[in-house]
Image (cartoon, rainbow, N blue to C red):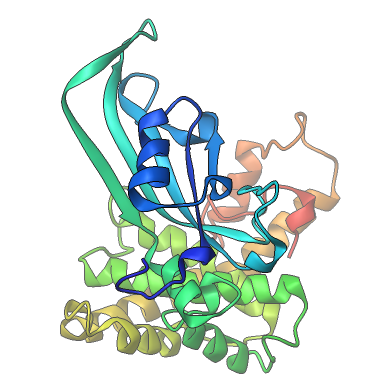
Length: 301
């Protein structure tokens, strides 16, 4: 952090598990972190793979956006000031079905850094979406909608983030060999991301007609150096995205109108329930995917 990335030590703070004196001692005495910038935390700093299995205390490194506030009563849960950028999980224990903890025979440290969070810090931008790996996608999507991103309402910004992030995800999914041709299984992820990601959202922010392939070309250009298969499968990626966009977005209007009639009619027998016959009626003739209707009247489009 300090040696390679050049982050000033005073910009960093760390957390340790409540009872993890060993981690506290290392940070304080071996590394020299001031005591005021080492925070003992509870269950959030104890990681487990599930109800049973390997687990252990963890220690996290946070970036401080405003060290001028001083070290008195530091609150690492204040996400307006602190951002977790690194995590170390000390896999020391095993939890059995009765909840009993015993030492693992093979202990290890599971460690990882947030790539986009680190990019946010080093590039001095307010969030992950404005880093150089995503920001060009948001800019392009906003331009297609005839909008200025920073001049838009928060809900419009959120929708532009959804579109850009989802198109990047589908670009990599198809590059890795997925496709949307299956109703279930591995390929279903592509269709689900298309449905939830940009067909409805793109229209809502003001984009008319197919547009995803154009944004995907930008996603390919951004990632091709690190992921050469993006260029190798570029034609497949663009063709698959165009196919899925057409297949889903064309019937979107008909299916959406069907669901709108449902929501403004009598309420379902149970709150939040969508009766099977209504789902069948809205999906079968329109091609509207059953997983994509709004979940409540609040999300009417």
